[in-house]
Length: 256
Ligand SMILES: O=C[C@H](O)COP(=O)(O)O
Image (cartoon, rainbow, N blue to C red; front, side, top):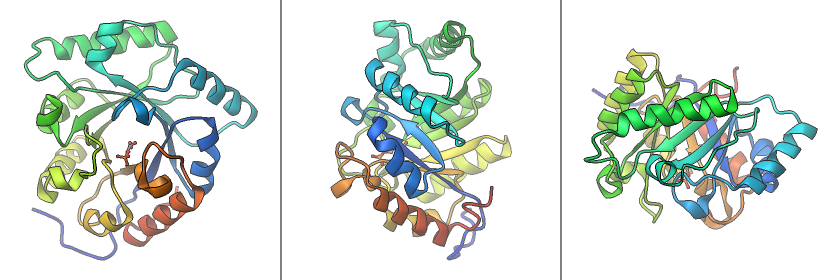
């Protein structure tokens, strides 16, 4: 059952903004981003930024320490298994996420996922907080279903579950998953203290609908970019406008 519709949802929601390079850090932060994410929008839904970009972002954070959590996308599990490149993750990263496209029918995906996470932690001598990623358009992504990803996230003690879209061709999260399906995933996650992030070409106008459910994080890139084009650059005033709308629909956004 959906919670009773109300103009103001009292659940605290944080704004995550996906930046692609050092130049986008300040517009995201000044606009009010509360979790800073890094991904390369030219490499798919969860494309990882290249080593040169990681280096310049690291230099930026050495000069300007940051006090909000930072996350990074690592691409798809199947891509990581195919290239086996050693991943060096900078020490300012808290959350890591990997997509599960092409895992449908792959019998050992769960153990491969666990092994890879352990290898990344061993290489970097750090325990990361892992975010499991479910795709709302999971059938097109040949991924496992959001309910199965949620089950796997709980089993593997992930810090959270992100529900995003795999295809970025104009359809939004809400085009693929009905609000009551999202609500039931959120209820199930919250009953196990698992945080839920929602993303997938979300726009300011979607916030009134999303205020009927209680995600913990809302993630954007397209809506923060000029012309709503995720391959364009982040604009401070667009992040700020989205953040303002978020505060109008979800109370206590900035209350710590
Ligand atoms: O995690 C957030 C995503 O980067 C959202 O990107 P998008 O708004 O372009 O779908």
